[in-house]
Image (tube, rainbow, N blue to C red; front, side):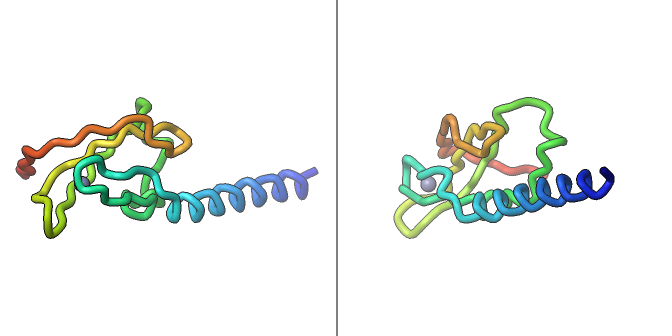
Length: 97
Ligand SMILES: [Zn+2]
């Protein structure tokens, strides 16, 4: 019985780590402004502890720029399966500490 439980837990953690590996490589969004492709690894998906998220969708702000586009912030609304359900872009950014 105990062995079965351990096996089940092992299976569960294997599935979890596999899906996290999959999510790292998953294309989750394309920025509507500069067409940058955002992958799971770009939002540090492995460091997001879903137990600490109080309300879904998770709002994740990704700031980036390229040679043709000045710095802008892409807000992604991410559900519990790490699928992006909505996007918003802001060109006005100030990060003050
Ligand atoms: Zn962009």
